[in-house]
Length: 181
Image 1 (cartoon, rainbow, N blue to C red):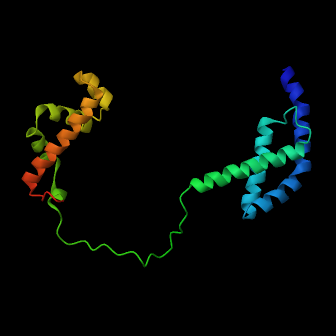
Image 2 (cartoon, rainbow, N blue to C red):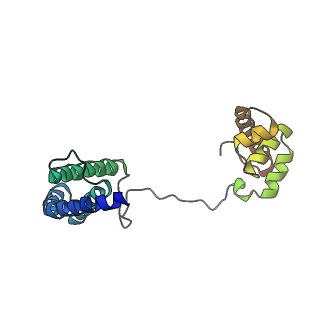
Image 3 (cartoon, one colour):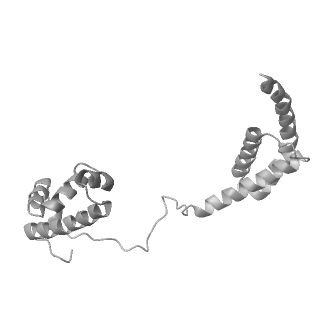
């Protein structure tokens, strides 16, 4: 209870400092930001952070402290913006892109069914079939499969890769898919 009583004057002081510094912060934000909306957001974020952390005891110039905090927030935003992919309006036309013409013939693999997959599974090695089924149909992780089969985790990956290669060979033979596709 004593903490809340002591914090009331701190909050009042902080509120007064923020009220006094806001016009200067707004001018600084307008110089830093490209749009008035971004400037307003920057001021709001600065005030919010100041309210959250309070004024440290060692701060002698609260207005300068708020301006420094705003500048640091602005730099953080610029860095975050630089990491984002560029924004492209949805209505932009792309006349320089070559259209893809799809031929009317569907590849044989597009007609593969689950029955084809199960039949192909019966044709591969039981060691690989077991790992493939646990991973694909039961959605177990490599670690869970390794624990269940009492093998190394890396062995699970190797067997899964080999199972996929064998399944591909079997499906190519059954569906007539060319090896180049």
